[in-house]
Image 1 (tube, rainbow, N blue to C red):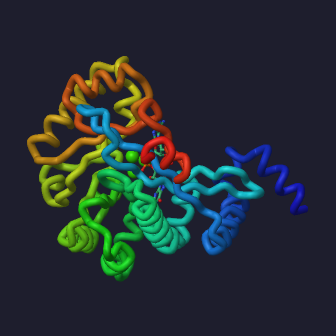
Image 2 (cartoon, rainbow, N blue to C red):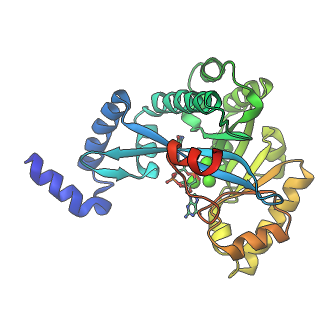
Image 3 (cartoon, rainbow, N blue to C red):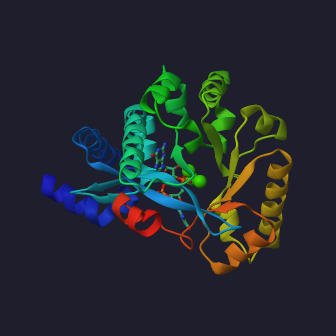
Length: 274
Ligand code: C2E
Ligand code: CA
Ligand code: CA
Ligand code: CA
C-alpha cells in the first residue's frame, strides 16, 4: 500500500497537494527532515541597478525529499505555518543563515551588503521571538541583516507584531515589506511600520513592457517610496527590457532570474563572492 501511495503521489502530485493524505505525509516528512538536517538554504543575489554591484542576497529555504523530490517552499512553508512547525523551521533558517555568514567571513569572502531573511507572522507573534533573534544573531552587525514580512502579513499584524518589529529595529536590524502591491496597505500604515525597504511584487514586474498600467504602478511605488525615505527592490526581473525599464525610472535595487538565480552556498560563493 505504501508503494501504491508513493506512485500515486508521483503521478498526481499537483492535484493531490491539497488532499489530506498528501498533506499529512508531507507534514510527517517535514518534521523528520527538519530534525535530521534535511533542509537547505539557497541565496539569490540582489543588485544595485546604478552600479551593477552585488548589494546583498535573499535567503530561500529548500527541501529536496528522497521520496517526494523538490517540494516548493510555497507548499511546505504554508503547511509549517498551519501546523505550528514554522517557529522551529524559522529558527533553523536564522541559525543556519547566520552560520553561513560566519563561514563566508572566515574564508575571506564576506557577503557584501545585506542578507534578507523571510519571516512569517506566526514566527513574529510567537513568544520571545525578538529575544531569540537577538540571541541567534548576537555578534553580527545588525546593519547587515534585513527581515522580510509580506504586506498582507503586516496588514494583519496586530499591535504585538508591530511592537516586536520595533524592538528588533531598535537593535539595528531593518525590515522590508515583501510582495508590495498585492495587499491593501494605507500610506499611514506604511509610515507606522518603519520598514527601510519595499519589495515590488514580481507580478507587476512580469507584465513589463506589455502593460502601461503596471509600469505606472511601479513608477508610482518607486516615487512614493523615495518620498517616504524607503529603498525599493524590484523582484522577479526576468528580461533585459524589464531591467532597462527599472533603470529608466531610477529604481535602486533588483533581483530576479535575469540578474541571478537562487544558488546553493557553494555555487553562490563561486559566482558572486570569489
Ligand atoms: P518570496 O519571499 O516572495 O521569494 C521570492 C520568490 O521568487 C522565490 O521563490 C524565488 O525563487 C522566486 N524568484 C526569484 N527570482 C524570480 C524570477 O525572476 N521570476 C520568478 N518567477 N520567480 C523568481 P521560492 O524560493 O519558491 O519561495 C517562495 C516563497 O516561499 C517565498 O516568496 C517566501 O514567501 C517563502 N519562503 C521561502 N523561504 C522561506 C523561509 O526561509 N521562511 C519563510 N517564512 N518563508 C520562506
Ligand atoms: Ca521574500
Ligand atoms: Ca516577494
Ligand atoms: Ca511571495
